[in-house]
Length: 230
Ligand code: C5P
Image (tube, rainbow, N blue to C red; front, side, top):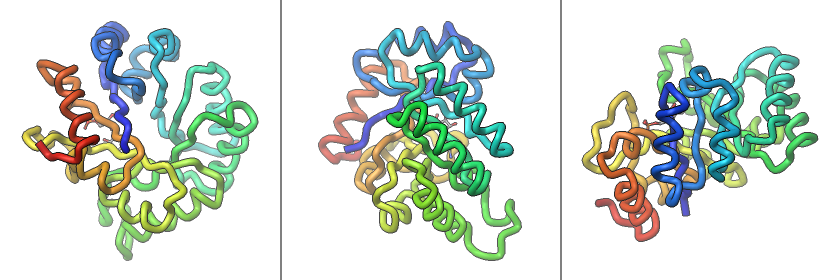
């Protein structure tokens, strides 16, 4: 069954903590992404940990191997991070350095590889072959290089589940039946994503813009548990 990760896409510490406190009783994972991290710095991680959340730090590291190794070391040394992301397109050496430092400092932390961002299409990358070929090739390498899981779009989810079932799958782009898609292009309902085998669902605006966030979370949980759409 899928677990919800709440994307705390706010700019300030106050907004993020206010919202996190409101939903604490129903949510155990929160995602801190670039917007919040750039607005607050690492102090937000400690404050969220004090509220007993598991933390997914989604900074999508992509740089030369030595720099990524240093960045992974620093986020894990904080002791606050339970799951984090790097780009698989950073290549074998970069990924292997990240895996190795993670395994020596904090083997329990989940290292996720980003294959190709869901905002990109085949033509954006000047690819001659379908984008899914690249996604699949990167997923295969992710497993070989020791990555724990993959952040995947609904489309990638099915391919990865079929071929590389050992990888943990984390899927954004989740929308309830009557939600606006916003900037997400390919969306799934919580029920559909669970059925396709997602281990974690990253959900932001469906919950953060809801007039009754707790009610919405319970509604999503029911969909996940009972396999219903509405
Ligand atoms: O508000 P919404 O539910 O669309 O939020 C989705 C979250 O997942 C955002 O924090 C976004 O940055 C993240 N994400 C995504 N697509 C990806 C990777 C991450 O939407 N490919």
